[in-house]
Amino acid sequence: MTGATVGVDTNSDGTLVIQPRGLLDADDAIDLRRTLVRAIRHDRPLRLVLDLREVHGLDPINVGTLAAACYLGDDQHVAVFLDHPSSAIANQLVRAGVPADRLRHIGPTTPGRRSGPGCRQRS
Image (cartoon, rainbow, N blue to C red):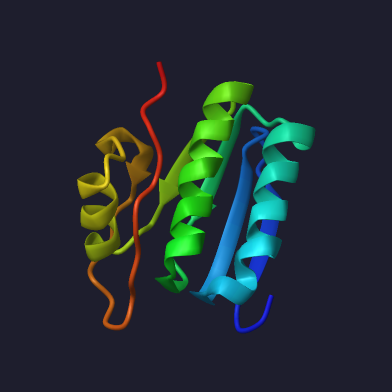
């Protein structure tokens, strides 16, 4: 990824944690999408957590990628959660239709952070 990095870790309970860092722009979209699709379709954890605490901004392509990851998770029976978004990011995600129970550990607004829509509620 260009100005951003993505960390991947597995917790002792089997939860896969993906930690994007920095400003995620169009140059990062393919790598982020590839990481998410591999995690959901091939690794198939029971839970996948996107830890957004170190994300400074998301362009529309990456917002769509996060939303698509939630839909793909629903289809593959993988619970996808968005953790540690700033309050501004969380508000944008909720306004875009992300159920509040998909957003966890919402933090304060961080200057310079942007975001967009997320994912649908699991049935």
